[in-house]
Amino acid sequence: MGAVVADDGPSGVKAPDGGWGWAVLFGCFIITGFSYAFPKAVSVFFKELIREFGIGYSDTAWISSILLAMLYGTGPLCSVCVNRFGCRPVMLVGGLFASMGMVIASFCTSIVQIYLTAGVITGLGLALNFQPSLIMLNRYFDKRRPLANGLSAAGSPVFLCALSPLGQILQHEYGWRGGFLILGGMLLNCCVCGALMRPLEPPKKAEATKEPAEKKVKKKLLDFSVFKDGGFVIYTLAASIMVLGLFVPPVFVVSYAKDLGYQDTKAAFLLTILGFIDIFARPICGMVAGLKWVRPRCVYLFSFAMIFNGFTDLMGSMSVDYGGLVVFCIFFGISYGMVGALQFEVLMAIVGTQKFSSAIGLVLLAEAVAVLIGPPSAGKLLDATGRYMFVFIIAGIEVTTSALVLALGNFFCIKKKLEEPHAKEVSEREELNKSEKTPEDAKVDSIEVEQFLKDEAEKNGEVVTNPETCV
Image (tube, rainbow, N blue to C red; front, side, top):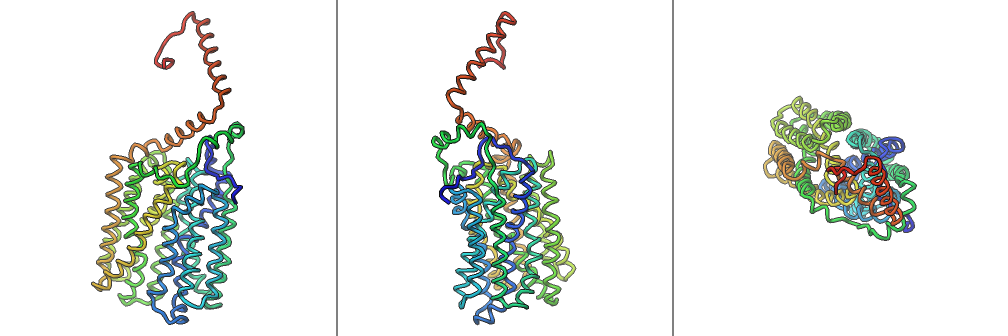
C-alpha cells in the first residue's frame, strides 16, 4: 500500500460529469446504503440477543450506537488515510474490516465481544468506505454534482427498506449467528465498490512536471486551515445542532404508535412509509438543487429543508391517532430526504475540492458528539415526562435553530463563496499549474509576448496603451 500514489485530485483535471463517474456513483449509492441503513437493520436481531445473553434492551442498543459513533467519530482518521494512501486502497481495506467484524461476531459468546466486533470493527470498516466514496463522487462530478449527491443519498432509504425485512428472514431461517455470517458476506461488496473508485488521471503535459511538483508541495494529511474559513465554521456548528434532533423522530415514532394502542406491524409500517417517501425525495431534491438559478443559492434551500423538518417535528407532536402519524411520516420523509441530499453538497460548495477530504472528516467528528447525545437525551426526557410530545418539540426546536444559524451566517460568510462555486477551485488549479511550469516554459511565454508586441508595433506604428494591456 505504501507504493500507491494518493489520488488527491490532480490539478488541471476536469470532472468528467459522466463516463466512469456513473460507476463511481453506483458504488457510492451502495456504500451510503450500507453505512446509514446497517446500524438500523441490525436492530432486528436484538430480541434474540436479549434471549441468548440475558441482557436488556439498553445493552443491545449500544451495538447501533457504537456503529454510528465509529461512522462519525473516525472522520479525521479516514481523512488522514485518504490523503496518505488514496481512496481506493482505503475502501478495499474498509470492506474487509466491515465483513470481518460481522463474521467474527457470529462466533461471539458475550455481548461485550459483539460490541468490539459488530460495533467497533464493522463500524470502522463502514467509515473507511463512506467518506472516501463521497470524496471520489466530488471529484468525478461538477456540473451534475447536486444530482449525483441526491442519487447517492437515496441509497440510505433503499437499503433500509431492503435490509430490515431481509434481516427478519435471516433471523427466522438461520438465527442471529447465521444472519450475522450472511450479512458479513454481503458487506464484502464494499470491496467491489472500492475497486470502482478509479483515480482521475492528470493531463499528459502535467505528467512531465509531476515529480518536481510533488517534491515542492508536501501534502497535509489533515488540513486544519479549513477552520480559518468562516463559512466552514458556521456550517459545522449548524450541522452539529441539527444532528441533535434530526435522528430522534424516526427512533421514537414506532414506539409512539404502539403507546397509542396500535399493533406492532401497523406501527412498524410507519417507517416503511417514511423510507418510501425518502427514496424519491432525495434524487428530486438533487435535481432541483442543480438548476442554474438554485445552485448558487443552495445554502438557502438547505436552510429551508431544515426549517421544514423542524416544523414537521413540531406538528407531529400534536398527533393523537394513526392518521396523524402517517401524515407526519410523509412530510418528515420529504424534509429528511431534502436534508440528506443537500448536506454534503453545501459542504463541497463551501470548502472546494482540494480541502473536502479534510473538511468532511472534521465535520463528521463534530457530529459524532451530537449523535451520541441526541437520542439518549430524548429517551431520558421521555422517561421523565412520559409524553412523546415533548420529545418531538425539543427535536423540532433543535433542527429549526440549526437552520437559523446557517441562514443568518450565510449573509456574513457563506453567501459570497456560493455565488461563484467554481471560482475557488479554478483559482487553486491555476496556482498549481503556474507552480508546475518549468523555467523553459516561462522563457517561451516571455518570448511569445515580446514577439506579439513587436508585431503590433510594426503593424500599427505604435502600441496603444489601454487598461487591458497595461500592467
